[in-house]
Image (cartoon, rainbow, N blue to C red; front, side, top):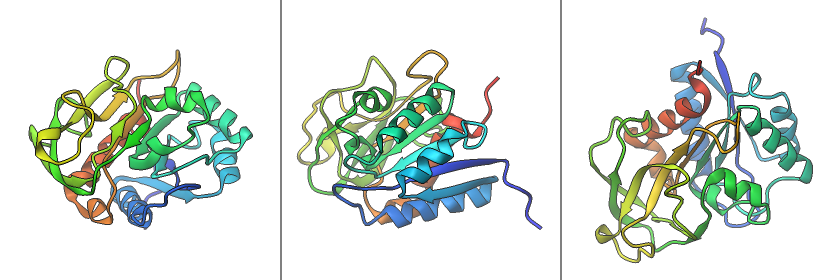
Length: 231
């Protein structure tokens, strides 16, 4: 019989604005990663279920993943629970449209590090890997060919986060941030005693979640925010 999973993560996929067709592919990919790596994945779109789960703290759920959420997705109680959860050391991982979420809640913007502004058409381009000393990028070469929407952000988070990878705007059409265009970043904590943060702007299409490099990218993000216990 399979052994009991050593950890659980909560995946939240509620949308009140644009909804990505790739959300089921993302959930399936995370569940497959969980089966292969000994952690359980619970997915919900119900903000009350999310709040109840995270209220139990990091010992119950090592990390919460906002997978292409959009719009205002949390209740007032859920906002407070998420604040307490991350403040108590719970890990937070945002994927793609997680940056298009909770615009009306300043804390969320501080937690994530940047907010989505716009994107050009879906197209191939190049991700420049800046930091290979991280489980989400250690398997990648210096230039990663990928197809995505190449999110622009309202401001670069560089300086307040550890940038792992950025967009090479010369490799596609319509980039709007110029030479400093972070796409993937992390942070040890956003407040004293708080949990780790990992965000990747990649993951628009369902095909991305079948890509072995992208799946390893997601697994590395999860390991960073909570699947690997820290001393």
